[in-house]
Image (cartoon, rainbow, N blue to C red; front, side):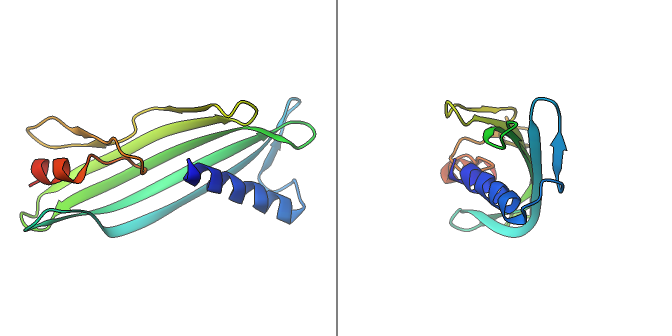
Length: 152
């Protein structure tokens, strides 16, 4: 949630600082929209220390946020779409596991209602059930003990 708020504030702040509504703004009869996209590539992030081996992950992610403004320029809703593609590596066995996530987050500014939809996180484990992430970070990961036992 803090990540989403920070992203929305950065987008809105950049819009207000430019003093211009032409860059990145699409008008319609009902509202205005500001769309902001960012992404990153990360290599070697340690996701679990498992005694005799370490699990690391290389990944790319992209987040696109659209903020909807009424005719007076007041934001009333935002929609964020996030895509994550990664590979988890076991330092001991050299085994790799595909990890991907997709989600859509809708925030209604008036009510504060936050809706998250879509696949949040999936780790493909050949010959076993796949792991679905369930923690507070994005993309969510299973707890460290589950990761270590399953990806050994």
